[in-house]
Amino acid sequence: MDAIRRHSLLIIILGSMIVTLATGLRHGFGLFLEPMSSELGWGRGVFATALAIQNLLWGLSQPFAGALADRFGAARVVVVGGAFYTLGLVLMGISESPLGMTLSAGVLIGLGLSGTTFSVILGAVGRAVAPEKRSMAMGMVSAAGSFGQFAMLPGTLGLLGWLGWSAALLAMGAIAALMLPLGAMLRDRPSAKATSDISLATALNEASNHRGFWLLSLGFFVCGFQVTFIGVHLPGYLFDSGIAVHVGSTVLALVGLFNIFGTYAAGWLGGHYSKPRLLTWLYLIRGVVIALFLLTPLSPPSAYLFGIAMGLLWLSTVPLTNGIVASVFGVQHLSMLGGIVFLFHQLGSFLGVWLGGYLYDIHGDYDMVWNIAILLSVAAAALHWFINEQPINRTTPSEISA
Image 1 (cartoon, rainbow, N blue to C red):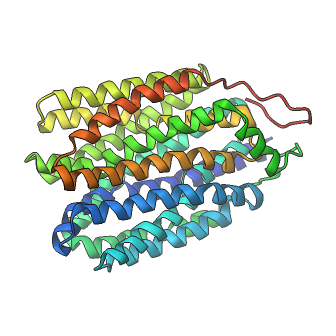
Image 2 (spheres, rainbow, N blue to C red):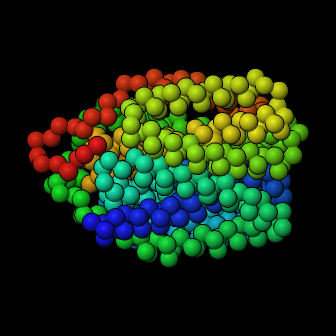
């Protein structure tokens, strides 16, 4: 039993470190929008399109990365993903054309993220810990991603001011390379708890015929739209309003700081209360927070308060959403099924970041996208209300447990 506990703890620690690096580096991309677009003579649509492709490819490749992790373990997937991530940052740092930006920031980093973030890591964690501790463990790892955003954003801003955008991206590539040895040590055991004989095809069939799976996926679409639009375009929105650049980076850092508490709390609450109901309230509160931010006169204090409030709600969806997938379908194919749900998150991310840049270039502001984000909060709240997280009934023996 002690060996099992030590293995579970090692998976949680290594997984947390990998997610910290992957998400921490990614959340700094919004700081490069203005300097790269200005120096290279691009409209914001070029940068936004590259990041939109990143999010889309991340989502499209995530189910396949998850299936590979379920079959062969997370270590190999993380190492390959980390290599793509590192190469993408290096090439992004030397990009001087829209095509180079798309291939580096879009394609390579998108593939890298699919192997180094939540679906793969939380799948490994879900298999390693006991069912009654699963929600809390997922909350802890998700909180680590929030810590990465808080801890690394000031460093990214410092690198940007010290070295300029090109050299800063090269330095970030060196930091991303740390994911390779960490991933190699992530000795996930895919078969350790897979005592059922549920095939991949059967798991896909179960999910495709489960109404709650599609409601959960559509709800996660909304999460992706909101957080990616805010994460990429909020610094530019504040800059356009005459607020100093460092305020935007501080707001994103506050999002990361308070997200630590939000995701940890969500993981704990998910182990004691209905996860679908918690998600309903989370999305409703998000809509209220965005509306208040827009109605309040914009200033550095109001921006900081927005960052704190959004931080508490930012990645709180992740342990709850993945927890529902594990509760309903079990852990044998958790990375793959979670990857499909995450695909919808990334479709929302693609639309949020691309639509933000597209409508900004047309209208010169983000007003329409903010209003869409509020309406989507209401829709997501309604969708989650009708999700049942009870395990599905199977005619064959199953390892499923909530």
